[in-house]
Image (cartoon, rainbow, N blue to C red; front, side):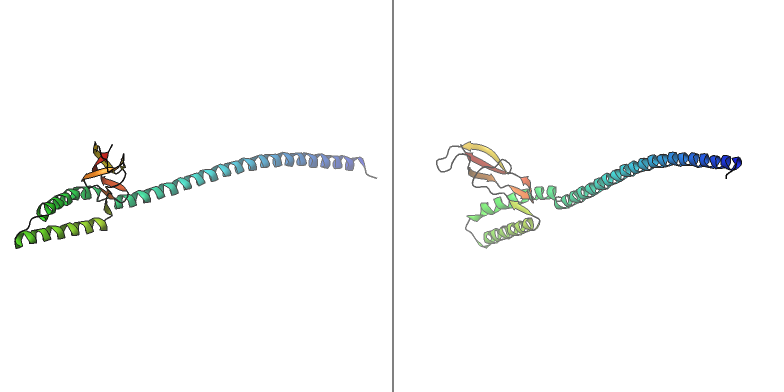
Length: 182
């Protein structure tokens, strides 16, 4: 049989193991709480990272798009200024077109015509195109100078073009000045 001292020792051991078990239970609960807090923090930081990365990618794409637009439209002001030269050359050509004369007049007509053709080729090379000035009036690309009565044209159709319009890529450099049928 077990004597009293041994029984007391066994009870002490049992109490210690129960205390240690309860301590380990408390420690486990604390570890679980700490683990769940750490998981929440991890999710929060992952979310922040993904958002920051997405923002960075969006900014990068927007800057690249803006860079290409800046390159595409860098010469817009210069091209607008060149339109005045094109207008002047066309008026010069029209003024000498019907004149019959000697060799000098013929050479002038030829020179102005060749210069106009070269200018048109340069415009085409850089994406500058003439705005269509016939058909229906479009306020985005036409500027109505006046409305006229016309039996030949329907309401809202372009009757006459006073000044050619031009566009560079998708932008209007100068709207065409037209008269529109009432």
